[in-house]
Image (cartoon, rainbow, N blue to C red; front, side, top):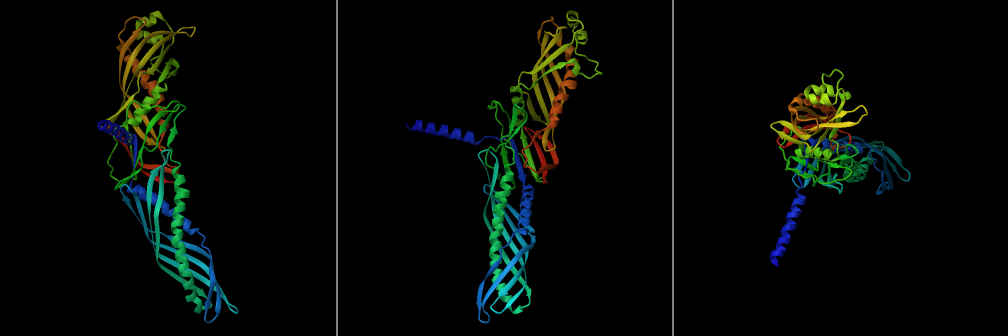
Length: 475
């Protein structure tokens, strides 16, 4: 029936749209400044390759009315100077980049020899190639692993002016040498410029892009996926790279139970690169670390500072809850903190807030090291988060805002959980957060190409995402 066919088509269409419209958790925008910087590197590589290029000998046999058969040979041709001063880059939306170099200059030097039956002579030859124009297109894609790829197409080079200067003994042969040398050199250089550019992209740029990390291992259980979710997009003023941007379980990968919201942001183009980190990026971290059991900690008295006025023993806690000291006098204690759900990061009003909840289980340690459960507490915490970039890694620091406590279970009788507020605040601030901050300060790797470093960084929290504006340098 027609309605059945239409229903199947609509279902398939909606599924296809949903699959292709995966929102990135991490988006990079390379501005015109950044693109120009990258193309300047390509231009520099091209100049160096041309300088080191070997031009083959130009030789042949010609016949003249005077000397009849002449054998000529122009050899040891070297390029002594290359300058490609002007470059213009046009971003063609949905197509790629058009790169045009103009006013190029190349200078060559070489030797010439001419032999006839009873005549030999030699000299030097110099050529100045001016007003060289080069144009090509760059198109961007992704391979099956999600890494970016770039290809060069439609390369063309044109030499408008080529002047040859000949020196030697037989000046009356100069015009012949120029006539033989000029078209061969023009043709060779015109072809070779595009061939050298093609080699740069196949031998240099493409392998270079393969150093972009699609995945990064954080520890034995957790990694980050930086693969492209769709093809790079060329907009009118930037190259947009939509990346997956999510943490995942290395041992058992599964989809997180929430999706990335749309991620877009405006840039002022003062920097070369703008990076948007969605809340999704950070919340997948919390979800995965919680799912692999990393969000738990045991606290004992030896973890407290030596000069601490609070100790984790029944004597100190007994001053707050008398029945602890009465039932278990002069014993060490142990607290086990474990998250009961994934922490959530929220960007709001220029601040980054992390909310988390968990359970605190308190134990007395008997002389034989047996643990006796005393009570358990529900804990809800709000933490201010500061995120930065250091050594090309994303880092963080946590500062406690407030903790709310509620009693879940007591094996020592009823008590007011509020009496533990100061002690729990102290333990979280002095023991737990410094350990987390030390790990966060080590940083998590960004998907950077080898030999590129970030500089002139600006980090700004916005609603639902974090924006990083930066320049980059090739070293």
